[in-house]
Length: 67
Image (cartoon, rainbow, N blue to C red; front, side, top):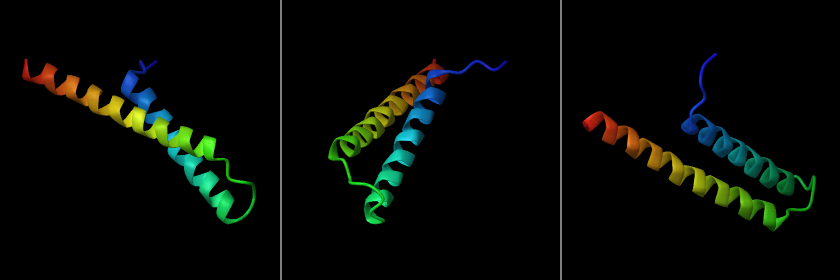
């Protein structure tokens, strides 16, 4: 069984947040449900935090390759 590392988990969380944000925005456009600003802000924050985490993980990999 393949070991799951932090970057895989981070990418998954970021992808789920993006999918959720798109769904919520489409739902508001189509008037399926009332847009909740709290959920949108949380989704955007999740994307920003996971993106920062991915950059940090990528930086560590580059440093290890240089050493």
